[in-house]
Image (cartoon, rainbow, N blue to C red; front, side):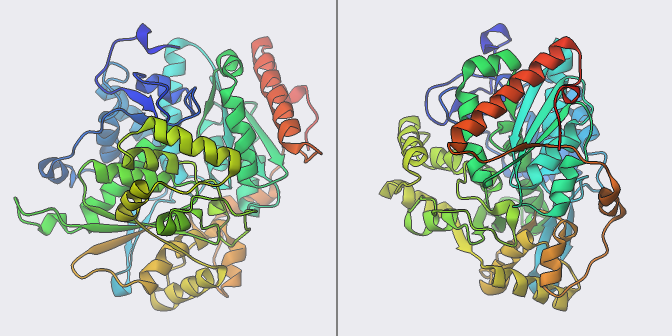
Length: 503
């Protein structure tokens, strides 16, 4: 679909690699990666004035998400009333009245809980909204799409729960077998709806991302089956995540106490970082005029930390399995968006950098870009021992249980005192209930929610993608065959799972 068939809007999108300009939100929503291999970003960013921020301070979280989305989705694509309805419906099933929640504890520790959705992970917030936008356009045009998702643990379950049963969408999720928690796996393989297709693959989540990226470069396959991504490759996911940072700023920075006309107060945001979608969102919010200090915290898979510290944007030989598996990532693909922003939107530079990185898995940032990056981001890395110590300390001091990913952020709070006069907020990306082994390793206990206990009694279904001699190409070829067969089955009006043998 080309944007020329629709009304021209003010907000247009381009690729971080310079090969695509002038697309609109609907084009971008249905595309995932850009045809040139890059990632979509707005050609211009709106600036949020102090008056706008103050006018937003009394909004509910769904209202704030609506305001954020309205900055990037023109009304000719989704009228304002429709946008409000889609966001409210998407965020209606969360377990706390406010959708998100702030926990304030001893020593100035403030945690923004983003895990009150159905799969108990922050990804439910952006995923439910993105799927509603997708379904809105599909219904409007009476067509179907196939969504392909590679997951390090939480994204897959969130995509499945958001899209299960939708008539216009087939969801293909690939997860790294043996590298996610039992709860994460069961949240995916217990979904038996005909439009959900789950694959267990040998290898790491980074291994999975490589052939999936190549599938999206096959424009014939993409066009034939309306192939799209719901990873944070998709701009819509990052767009909704802007609201995390704005909500924290409005409620934690001290804005309400600041005098009108005075400089806006600064807020430090500490973010557990894997694929870097949240950090990219934070950088965008910062460029929209919000005075944020951003801290990207990793586990032993510390590529973002090394990149910020020394400019060494290079993968380690292997992905290390840690207690925080959702950020066991050596290819933080959303850093491409950050590099593009900080290089002055230099598509040619980013294209050269990322193609070298994809070919050799190594790159040293240009000095000017590294200087920009280190001014915008602070970073750190936390060992499993540090995660355990942080979980134990937080429980001892506050009787508050952290998930291991949130502990990666809170470690920074305990080990790096905040700057005087600057408030700090740590992002909590998942419920500790999803990571029972980590809780037990810390010598702590938790009561599992009934919804998680029920997973053990449910039937399961998935297909295996096993490692062969030429695993990369063999795996990619077999997944492509499955995608083509799913599309063919839908055209014939039959359930794909009636045609294959599942595990």
